[in-house]
Length: 314
Ligand code: FAD
Ligand code: MG
Image 1 (cartoon, helix red, strand yellow):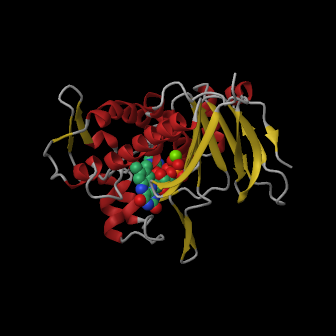
Image 2 (cartoon, rainbow, N blue to C red):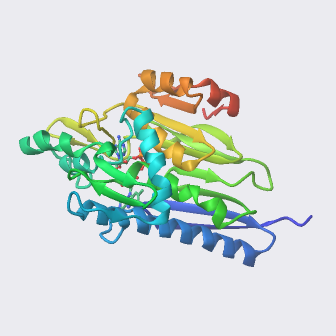
């Protein structure tokens, strides 16, 4: 059988670098499939991004409290999954984190919240504060919560790709969350997980056949303000930045689950996160920097060790 043709493209999506690799019988088909994948990612960004005013989520955030908004069919299918993970993780994953993201200046280089924000924001946080009517596909904010897709938007977008390009082998790296449709013609794709203390250096390599690997960590988006570290991952239960060394990576057949759970486990921390992930039989691994800059410590759940032959990069 003739060697398949591989096409690759790097674009900027959801505020981050995204690479797409597609294999197909010929170049024209590979390009057509790549285009279909890209359009699906772009369409999802348009629906979910609260970095843009014209998305459905931004509209919901602007809707007067108590006034219902009809959501897009896609967001309607998504909503019960957000609620399920929010409830299952006791709010460690909470897409109404937007008010705390604002209060801590996560999008503007970090700041201390004002006294008023510290007082008011807890009442503006909690997915249970949005009434959702699945049958009529409408959502109603009961208080001025602010939705933020930062911890589920990438996974939601990647989760739509199998329908966008059925049949071909592809690998998409969306700002650090990787998804594969199946092995390449040469076998599994090799995915490197970065050292938590040096993003440019790989700590280990994993053979990815399918599903998605999502990593959460604060190394890339954290700022020191008046001697205090502020990161882009916040604990919704305390309203404070999660300042931890290390990263956590979750493999899941569903990219949406991988995305939400990696953030939730990062908020929980290695001990509680590993306990939760082991109880749920989740494939998760924490990479923790060694005190002396030596090899990173790898703490994986049994499900992760069953799924992956881990190759440590020296
Ligand atoms: P994750 O751990 O998956 O998510 C962390 C992000 O989720 C945080 O950045 C915050 O937004 C949110 N969050 C923090 N704590 C919690 C929590 N406990 N529960 C739930 N959510 C939490 N970045 C730009 O700079 N410019 C853009 O235009 C831009 N557009 C985007 C559009 C979309 C649709 C999405 C999904 C993301 C976009 N981003 C943009 C990036 C985004 O804001 C985050 O930085 C990115 O999603 C972090 O993803 P992660 O997988 O690295 O971290
Ligand atoms: Mg993520």
